Length: 87
Image (cartoon, rainbow, N blue to C red; front, top):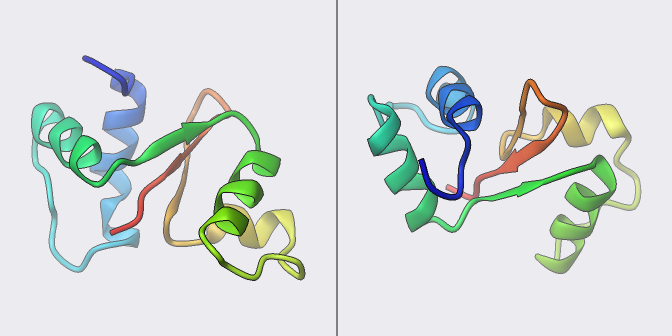
């Protein structure tokens, strides 16, 4: 695997329905290719998630940590990091 860990790819495959009506990937390789194509990022903290959204122009001033974790673009990874996918 390249930039995305196997754990990250497995989480995306399992939870991609939170962002897409139809699956966009069925294998780890397809998931990695999709994430690379859409320039998904892995960040270490919710503060970095907030910064990412702010840089994208989103109004996150009134979002709680729980709301940030529940945003459809955010996938909470088992290792405590966050995958952000803009579909």
